[in-house]
View 1 (cartoon, rainbow, N blue to C red):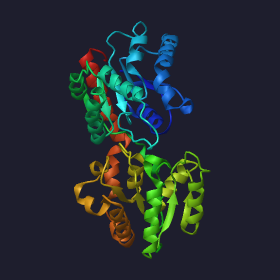
View 2 (view 1 turned 90 degrees about the vertical axis):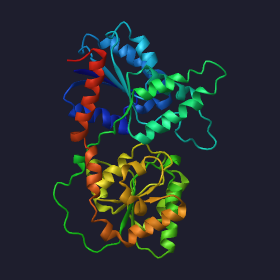
View 3 (view 1 turned 45 degrees about the horizontal axis):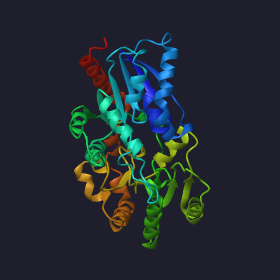
View 4 (view 1 turned 60 degrees about the vertical axis):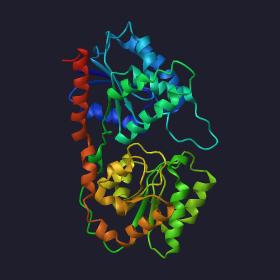
Length: 375
């Protein structure tokens, strides 16, 4: 098959997924991408027009597609309408939801712009198949649709929710985990304080302030630990970010976004415990990468996390309150050696592209077959 992959916001996990699938798929994938520099809002509004132009201009230079694969950042209804004369009729289209604008938590002072939520809704309605990176995300989005449609006084079209649900499917994001394998085994670890890792983005939806409050409580208990802060900062010069670095400098092994894969890999293998305090997480790629490198998870009992860990780990690894967080973290520090013996890597291994790409291929083949496209 020839697959046209449209990535309106080509950065971070979106770019990694597009490039990973293109590298591992058994199909021929043509990638059209737009940079993140325009911001996600402009991409959701304008990418459909830009991609339609690009398809018209490059029609003679690229193979005729059997299927279009895109993401929640594209206004698919607009794209389909603008390409009705330049793409084959009834061309099947698949949309992959990394996140959505119906449920993404906002800062208290920011009102939700429902135009983006509506774009997500019409995109899902337009697509032949709607893919979600987790079952939690699928349920979160679907359960929010009645609230969106119910805002309007008539013609609420609630029956479309069942239409979207019938063509929705869970397909986790593939991850290039093999890049995290060490070139050579590490020497046997000596005695050292457990190393706690923060690899989340430094932003309101990841709640870094809660993480550092938990570290304060942990230190007050007399726990000995070291710290790696490797998440990307939206603005590394914010007073809170600078103050936290100064406060924890005696315990720091590393602070700041890793410069390259080799540095990131080394930090993950140095770490013993990974902590999340997020209020928004639909898959948790950073968590899965840390698990692959042997980290003990301490996670909220919400969002996608209960889905990622087998039930037998919930009691020790998932928390519901701040007091629980401190308890789970303290337990992980005290029992680090024993907890490290669990095969955390096995929980993450199924997400590697070598195993995920055939699943993606099967989905697009089935969608194309139903639509009468593909070889």
